Image (cartoon, rainbow, N blue to C red; front, side):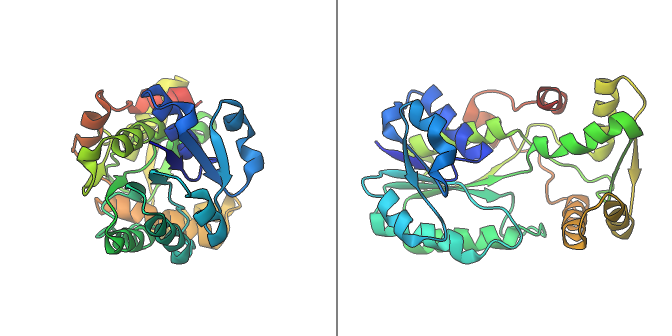
Length: 284
């Protein structure tokens, strides 16, 4: 069984490859695909075959998928990602007649107000249209994304957001990577759309409490409006487009789109998901 993991130069793609090896898949049965082969030299040294796999270059996709049994399509998650990028990979996978496809989507993609949701929902529809045996991995937020506010809080003693009291059922990249490794190697998951979340959802007030524990100083949470948050981001040097994107994500959190008490992720990986405080400590 040959498994290609796309986006292998990124953090999630690399972790998926590591978890596949940990689960007993031979390095010689794995293929790492990325836009730039120069970023995969360390994987090649470990016995993993590497291929150019550029979502904007269909020729690399068809060539890279030759002889591939299964594909983990690590999605691009930028608000300006052209839908054609994912579509090109999906079409190439259908043409190659892969026996299984796993796609890393976003939590509640078909209904969420998160700015990235429409891109992923479109990719999910394209996968369904091919008729390929597939599993959709709707990942909640990555806990690592909250390291920045915690690091700044060491100096400022404040964490701000426009998320109000909204809860985030985040999990770490290693948690999600483990689930992807499980899903692509177990046919029982094919045909399913899996909403994957951390075991314990947290608020930004909880994040401030965790920061206070880590830094051993008082850290408070200050709730802002979207407009106030955008203004704060501008003082930090962020461009208006990025500031509005981050504020919109907070608005979706406030509306409950990242809240969950589901245990599908921990059940898949056979252990509790990484706690907030442990994830933050390991990332610092």
